Figure 1 (cartoon, rainbow, N blue to C red):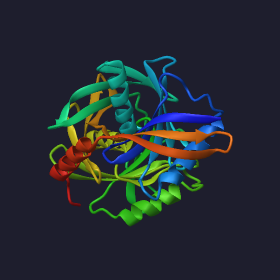
Figure 2: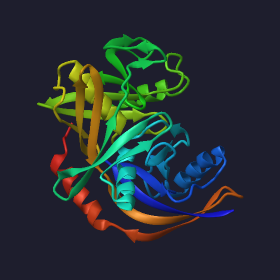
Figure 3: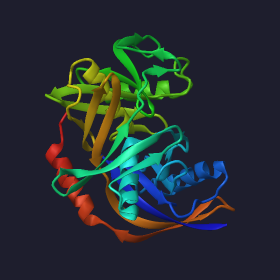
Length: 317
């Protein structure tokens, strides 16, 4: 059967996605077809585009809309902070709403249309809660994990996806890559894998974060990881609760608001959602093949505006 899917190629902090708009009608595929589709789409486009994942905007069952998130390896994620903002932008355009609820596999999150994060850069946000701190019942609070590293102190937190976070003095992307590969390839301590992030304090209410994302690899940015870092740093007194934190990354910058209200922790993640192209993807489910990708509209001004924003906020490690 041939399916024609409306798709937006987009990014949040240069975390790149295809956003499939199926709000009016779901594809109706068997579960395994989503993974096959994602792998085939990324394989077809990989020589030309960086794609970290595929988002599906679907009718809501218990909320205004529903989001499914697939990583580049075809695995399904529980949440995606950068992807949520892109999906929020599309839903806001369709519905006209400025606040809404979007359900994922495990939770319902509130999304908002926000003031500009920078001149001409539209901003969207997601409120991440509940927050937990364990991985399979074990909580790590600035402690060594000998199976991973003898010198790094790790903290665990779950902001929709499980995170391991370590503060470092100087960035070593090679070490981050090695740890990310290790923790996500049949690691005995973390059998389900994990996001892993390094961060530095670079100023008052300013952090720099780099992440190896489960199912993706090294990323320009990871929304749930940056949110998790802001909360861990607030608990350590490195930034203040209930005040905005600027979090710089290889893809630009977002803002996080780590909150502690009556001992209930949450974090608001705010940043761009940049649309680059609108395309029609022709997919043949009989042969599990992406037959064609047709560009129907481009948004060059959004790309240029984000480039200017990134240049203005970039932090050299």
